[in-house]
Image 1: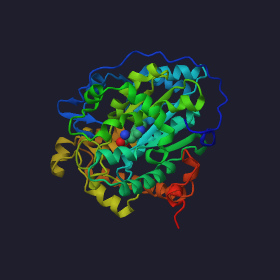
Image 2: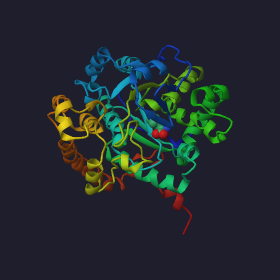
Image 3: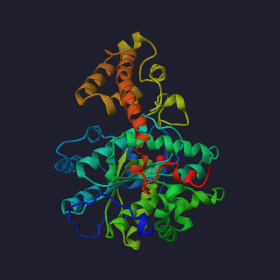
Length: 416
Ligand code: TRP
């Protein structure tokens, strides 16, 4: 465990905590990550994703109206990401809420694999995480898995990953998380906080389970095989920090579920509550289906993009429109597969505006150029605001890092 001087201090919560363990069903099951017509694994998301099939295959639960009402009891409203089903699936969210009501506060845990620049798609789960932090007044652990990205990407070296890690931290801070209630962990810098837990986890997972869940094979490098416990460790870190079993809620895109599945399986054996999840969908890319990808820059709107670049990318985007204006007027567009429609729906339109846009588009009364124009108008100031906050974030890094140090502090120590 970290020594006394490294002890991790969040501002103390004033709620009483009872140390009841969370009862949950056992959800270890087979893992056919590959469903016909689409693929979802932590490293690959491709195809036209059928989210209800994913719920079935992964063995998660849909977020239904009853659960949404239950959340509303705490938040006083229904967040648009719940209303529009961007967050659509969960494990044990109801259990975590019940515990919270009893005074047993959960921790939030989320993360980012720093393999590139941050784009609009990444911000969505983070915005929701910030909302949960505010509404429930809870602590957050934010992990950056630079080790994962190094091990899993043959074309990325540590130098590039470190650059992305730094840039990504600026984005994370720009979201506006509460520095007193947020700790950022960069795996290669802060492994001492995770290592004792990750070996506990590793010892309980066999190679045969890892192969079945993650699809490892004889040609996987052994670092990949050893990595999952490092992403599992923050699920249990809150129990160490609080010195009592402490529930954790993980907001994440559903492709991360395999990690939580194995972690949940072994949690109780190690004496920790099973981590709960709230799963989001993927945001579509600008040219194709699947998730927006940093490795295909033309498909992503980055937080560091200049306004003209944003405008060009949006103008060139794939839409659900017909090939000609005449056909569009006659047949209407296909909003369901249109990234412009979904971006506006998820981030900018009100419920009513989005409904009208849908009807006008599918009814042939709206042309793609008009929607793109709307999107350009919304995205530019949104990104501009983030860029201002990113600039300020450079001086705030220390306040967020789990060791209280600046990003480059250790690298510079002793060298002159
Ligand atoms: N593996 C994730 C990625 O590649 C990063 C990550 C680590 C994460 N811990 C997490 C994501 C917790 C969501 C929740 O992006």
